[in-house]
Amino acid sequence: MDIGEVSKLSGLPTSTLRYYEKKGLIQSNGRNGLRRLFAASVLENLALISLGRTAGFSLDEIGEMFNQEGPKINRTLLLAKADELTKKIKELTAVRNGLQHAAACPVPNQLECPKFLRILRIASKNRTRKSNILKNN
Image 1 (cartoon, rainbow, N blue to C red):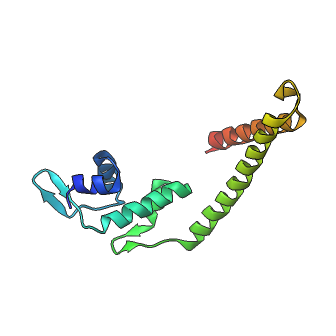
Image 2: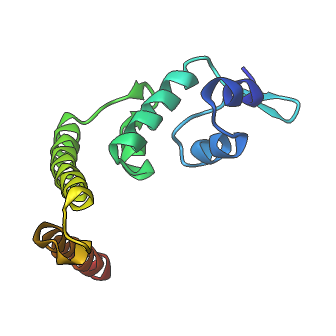
């Protein structure tokens, strides 16, 4: 398949496909004129990349899971990412519940709602913690 076909079938722009090839995530088999050619199996690799990105893996982490024979998925890394997602789901569920409560809270101003104020404090702590992590890396 040429790069245009892969783009159409995967829904990814050709620029992304070229970037993924540059990063070593996918490989073309050659060219037909100026157009890159790919094996049909590239669509499976692109689906794995998409799943990895959705799960929060970086492209570098995803790249480590690919070799010449195909994907070699690190089960330990998968379990660690699953644990991260479980934690994130719990955090987002608590935020959603708090927002629903604040919307239904009978106080005239949400800033008078104790539960909403608790959510704001948590959000502030999380922002500060993330900022400190970024500064230290």
